[in-house]
Image (cartoon, rainbow over all chains, first blue to last red; front, side, top):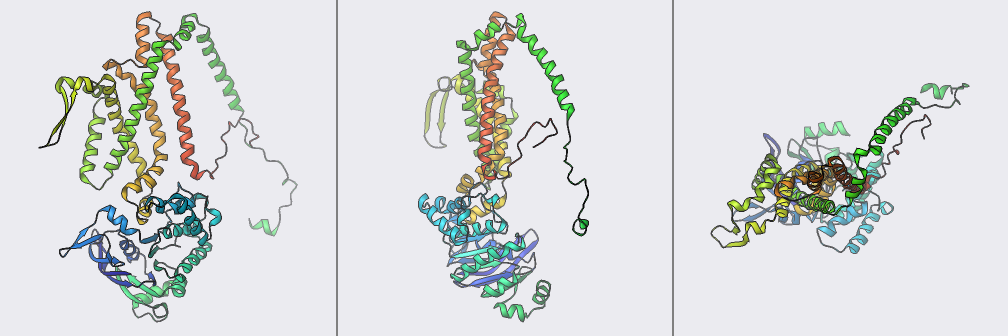
Amino acid sequence: MVEAVGVRKTYGDNEVLQGIDLTVGRGEVVSMLGPSGSGKSTFLRCINHLERLDGGEISVDGHLVGYRRAHGKKYELRPKDIAAARRGVGMVFQRFNLFPHRTALENVMEAPVFVKGLGKEEARTRASALLDRVGLADQAHQYPVTLSGGQQQRVAIARALAMEPALMLFDEPTSALDPELVGEVLDVMKGLATDGMTMIVVTHEIGFAREVCDRVVFMDDGLVVEQGPPADVFDRPQHTRTQTFLSKVL
Amino acid sequence: MATDTTAPAVTPHADEPIIRLRHPWRWVAIVVIGVYLAEVLWFFATSDAMRWDLVRGYLFEESIMRGLWMTVKLTVTAMVVGIALGTVLAVMRLSDNPVLRGLAGGYVWLFRGTPIVVQLLFWFFLGSVMPEVTFGIPFGPEFEFGQTSEVITPFLAAILGLGLNEGAYMAEIVRAGIGAVDHGQTESAQALGMSPFTTYRRVVLPQAARVIVPPTANESISMLKLTSLVLVIGLADLTTTAQLIYGRNFQQIPLLIVASFWYLVLTTILTIGQGWLERRLGRSDRYRSRPPRRLMLSGANR
């Protein structure tokens, strides 16, 4: 589903990704852990080309992300084509980024109508079903400001699902939430995982990673240090850097 | 706080009513200002030199009406041109494309940097240096639109002068509005697969509009009065018409009052429109019900 080879990314002199190799299979749920500044969010953003790569390549579903391969070179795509490629990848942000000028329902309808060209009525029906799925059918006509953080994040998940993505990226989806609201968002994500969605989750929720994820990837200093099933990585970490990190968060 | 739980304050004073701060001096100010204002109004209202009969007579006079209509037409058209052009220029200035950025920057520099009267005269006299309007594609065919003096009528020259100038100012207003929208909005729109155009149209500009409306209303009200500059190219707007009339009958003040009356009417309409737009664009956060603003005179607030 996702294949990353030697992904590098530099901000000025700072090489935030120093050659990431990662393969995620269809239906797999992978969580990415690591200290802040380790490059895990940047890598996630590279997967749908919100960040340009400086080296290596990523392909999703067999298609190169952001580039077109020809004559032994990779040519950068036009914004329109990149936009088209992103439709198969859903993304959920730390700060929700709901459209504040649209109601919950309109947020979910927006992309199907204005990107896919779906009819308003059909989009509305589907959006209602999605809001129901994340437990917010009764909040459909509320504007985001009136919703709690947990509710906003669930709308954001519904909004991403509206494009029927084959892959979902979560960038610290619960980090901006009050502790008592984390559970409701994680529950929705668990439901998605159970339904077989391919997911990459950057998170600090060790409990979620242990319970739901098939694999845990530990990153530090722009490199994948260690990866494996949660039980191995959490209970028998091989590298000292993993051990140090886990001793702080567990 | 700790005492609250351990020893409830059982004092005989707990039930005493709370009296809000009173503002007696506000009443005094109202009376003083009211008296002075009434005196001034009385003086003007009863003065024979004011010629209120003339004011009434000219208020709906035909040439005044024509001037008023010209002012309205010029303001609306110039603002429509200005807002459309300004939006395009702002998006160009924020583009990744250095050619578009440079073009927009140069445009704003030129049209903000030269006097508007000069620009009006420039379009009006364009025919003297460029007798025919043609549009040529380099190394390609040339299209002819006709005699410059016929194509660019005084009204079109006025619209070009006012509208193209306004576009430069609006470009900066729209740019500031776009800058006020959180970048996360663009990112989430992109992540949903929106093209740059759709992102602007559906996500960024509607949110920028809230920031853009107040300064745009300012520009419109200022344009209302700026249109009187078309006098230099021979068009008669409201102010010019009033001046023409008092040039003949020497009743300056009455005619200036007539003109001011109509400007105030138009400004009031624009202000009401601005308020309506602001409420409409602000409906997404109407839950933040602000307490109704009341003139707090007595202590009994609420």
